[in-house]
Image 1 (cartoon, one colour):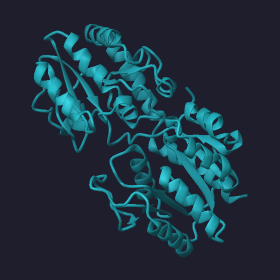
Image 2: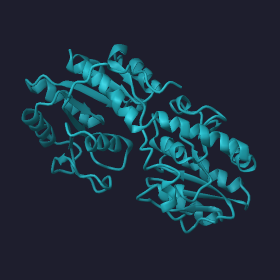
Image 3: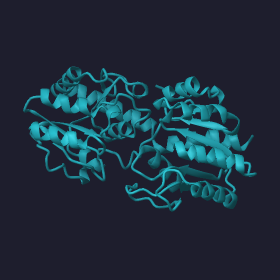
Image 4: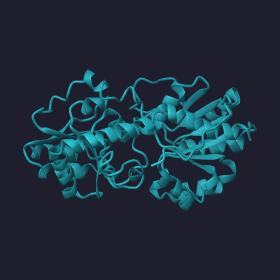
Length: 366
């Protein structure tokens, strides 16, 4: 469970970076890019299109004034940003951004290095995407993979050379997400403090495994309750399940997930696949016991009974067993909570930024 595969650089070079991202919706890639820009004066961010839902509390970016997923204006805007600011690195975070970055590098005479941040698109078995990465390899200088499994998929599916891949796990703001920070949040109104409370937060899509949690709720007794938050295609179905299940409460979408964290005794991460879930780091940092699946990439971050309880993906009976065991074993709760906090310290933003400096510097010194 090594933190990174990136070596620490001994040379500090001031690097100017232009980050490019498809939109500023509520996702892990957006939080990573925005945090890097907020904490570095020499980092800028351009967003390729407007969106209805945007990340709260951050507006330090330029944006192409269009809601269309594909438009030539966004390419022109990035090209213009490159010509104006002459960045050392253009760091692209999502699929359309990567294509735009590749096109701009081909079209411009500026000698920037192109970094593609693989947040998870390679997991989707999109052959067109894989072929773009494979055939545009001469234009791409570096890939950042958010887990070792992600790095393996880049090699296997897109034939990305191993020497161009750096593994850099996601990070957590250990001050914002701490057990102390939860004291300023009130538990959700649906929460009953007399019951052992299980939480889920995430997109209501199949790969996130939310149905596993909902089905497990039906097997738990009256001494348990389950609070679920999130948005997505499964909202209507989850609403129906809530109406039929007394101890299941759907809270809708929460602007700050710490509202959920403040009212739960443990958190379930039931993903079928998840390249590097931000919420895992946040749960660990807040000192909340974690129950999670053995899905690839998650298994790089969680060791069973050390910093979480692990159950087979999609196994409702095993999830129920884990929840009941955790409730009845106070020593186990303490052990995995302490293990989680130690893990969170390793994945702090400071460590992340220091490690990202290594590939940036290597590219600048070429």
